[in-house]
Length: 487
Ligand code: HEM
Image 1 (cartoon, helix red, strand yellow):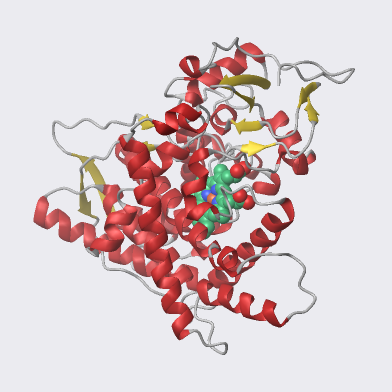
Image 2 (spheres, rainbow, N blue to C red; image 1 turned 180 degrees about the vertical axis):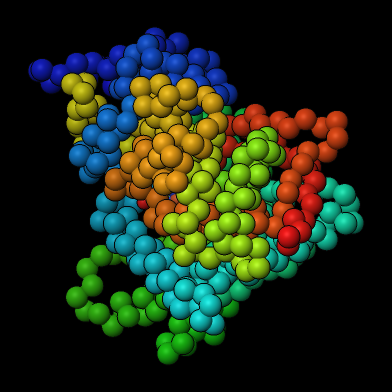
C-alpha cells in the first residue's frame, strides 16, 4: 500500500505513524469512537491508520461522508473480508459478507421488499393500521404487565433482559409467524447473551486485522463463535419447519415468502443472478439478527435516559396525557402529535450514538476523496459518533437536550435538524430496517412512558458509560418502576 504510486494531482493520505507489526492499535485503544474522533481533529475528515499490517481509511464530517457514501456510492459500497465476518450466518450474511455487487444488490432488494410487505400487511382487527403496529402494541402491553409482575416479586428488574424479548417477538412475528414466552429459555439464552457479538464485530477489533491473534485463545472470540453457531441452529430449525409446512397458497411470513421466491426462480428460465437457495432463505437470519439487537439497545438506552433526566420523563408523560390520553394504547398515527417524544428519540440516537461506526465498508475500485488517493480493496470506517458530536454541526454537543430538535416555540419538530443525526448509515448500504426501527422505537417508548415511571435503586447510581462494540450497550443494571395511575 505504501509503495503504491499516487496518481498525479492526488495526495497521499495523512495519519499517525504506524509501529511495526501492530500499526496504530495502541493509539486506537478500546474506545475507537473517541480516539478516532480526536485524530480527525488533527488529520482532517479523511485519514489513514494502520491496524496490524492493514491500512484503514477513517471518514468523518457530514459532507465528506455524504460525498463518499452518496455521490461516490458504488465505489464505497463493498464490505472488507474480515476474519470475524466469516462466522456470521455461516459466511453468507447479507450485511457482513463480501458478496459480489450483483448478488448483494439482488439479495438486498429481496430483503427490503419482504420486510416492507410483511410490516405493512393489514392487522387482524381494524384498530391496527398494519401488522407491525399490532405486534408492537400487543408486545408493549405484555412488557408492561411483565415488568409489573417482576417488580411485585423482586422489587427491581434488568431493563434489557425484558425489552429484548418483546422486541425479538416483534421481528419473530414478521420473520417466523410466532412469538415466545418471556421465560422461554431457548430464546432468552440467544438474545440475552449477544454482547460478545457486538464486541467482536465492532470496527477496529485487532483480531480482524492481525492474523496471529486468530490463533491465540480468546474467551470473547470463543463466545462469539458459540453465539453464531447457536443462532444459525435456531434459525435453521425454524426454516426446516417452514419447508415442511410450506403452502404456496398461504404465505405466512417472511421465511415463507423467501422459500416462495426460490420456488418461483426454479420455474423462471430468464433468471440470471446465480444464487443458492441457502443464500436467499438465509436473508431471514440477517433480518432477525439486525431486527432485535439494535432496537432493544435503543430502547434500553432510552429507559436509562428517562431515569437520568426525570424532568424530561415528566414532560414526555404530560405530552402523552394531553395528546393521546390515558385510556387507550398509543398508535403510530399519534406520531405527528408527539413532537417532544420524537425529539427525545432523535437526541438519544445523537447523544448515545450507540452505533458509533457503520459496519466497515471497502472500496470496490481505486478512487479519491477530498483530493486523497484511496486504492481498491481498502477497508473504510465511517465515524457516525464524530458526526453526531461535531461542534461544527451541533451547539454544545455533549449536553443531552431534546429541545434542539424543536421549533423555538417548542410545538413542532425541526425535521431538517433531525436529518443531521446519523445512525442508520447513508447511501447504498443504508439500513433497510430504518422505517420499521423508527416506528418501533416510537411506539414501544410511547407505551412505556404512558404506563411506567422509572427510578434507580437506592444507593445504586446510574452508570451511563457505554461499552464499545458494533452496538454500544450500557452496563447491565437493575431499576425500579411504578405504574402510572389513570388520573
Ligand atoms: C445495516 C443501523 C434496525 C436491517 C445497518 C447499518 C446501520 C444500521 C448503521 C450499516 C450501514 C452501513 O454499513 O453503512 C440500524 C439502527 C437500527 C437498525 C440504528 C435501530 C434503531 C434495523 C432493523 C432491521 C435492520 C429493524 C431489519 C429488520 C439491516 C440490514 C443491514 C443494516 C439487513 C445491512 C444492509 C447492507 O449491508 O446492505 N443498520 N439498524 N436494521 N440494517 Fe439496520
